View (spheres, rainbow, N blue to C red):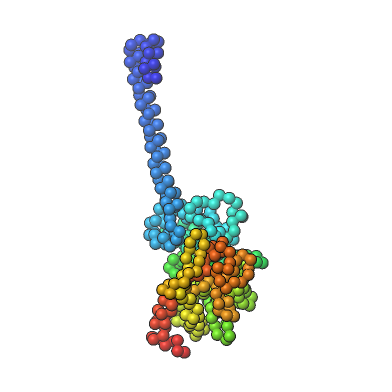
Length: 387
């Protein structure tokens, strides 16, 4: 193209004019090339700055919240930290909660906020609040603080007069309205409120909110104590759901029958054992719960997952297990499919439910380990267990 231009100019102009024009054209071409390269480099730099942060969001492990909490303040001020916080803000519902089973950190919500259905179930809401509280401490971004306040106020408002929490707020008329221990929902809310009341992570909150959080936590403890199921005059453990008015055990989904829960009760006992200077009520509840776990362990079997199924196999050397649900009256492990019919063997329910639910677990091991430390701390020094 350049040589053709020179020929054209030679026809119309003299040699001197051609030389001057040639220099001018060369300068113009070089400038054009320079600006094109500069624009491409700028675009590449911008992409290099943004893409890694976006890409890294896709590679955080499943327990990303625990990993986020270990990051230094500088990370929360980094492009990646700011991007995650911005994404989290976009997922907060108008009520103040966040949706479950959704990665609220990976990408922003771009739909109508009024369609967001927030919940306390499946680790939702509590972890977003913790992240944004930490982000505010590091950045002083007022948007983060406002979202934290909105979330905490929502949790405080959702607590029943009896001290428990529904699965989401405002509750509907179905099982999510019950006091929800399932999947450690209420325990997580209470741990958050305890930190809101006393932890430096929430020192930026006003005195009124921190005081309300403490009072809310204390009401939650009283609710837990009143929900502990009494069988033949003896305290045992808890159901995964309890009535919001009279504390009685309640069912949830068709395969989640009224029962003594081996899973949720472990989390409740761990919370009770974390209390400083436990009063006699708490001490009795912990001891009774520990004794139930000791008497309810299942030995000589292991759960094998094979061919898309879960099968119980005999193994005298297997470590102890606990069933997810026990019949209240007999303390026998119970199981149920989507038809809601109680069975006493895992093999009796459909394959989809056998594989798709945690019917057995090692939850009692956590209780035993925690109880040994708790007993050592509160028995010999203060002698409180003998009162």
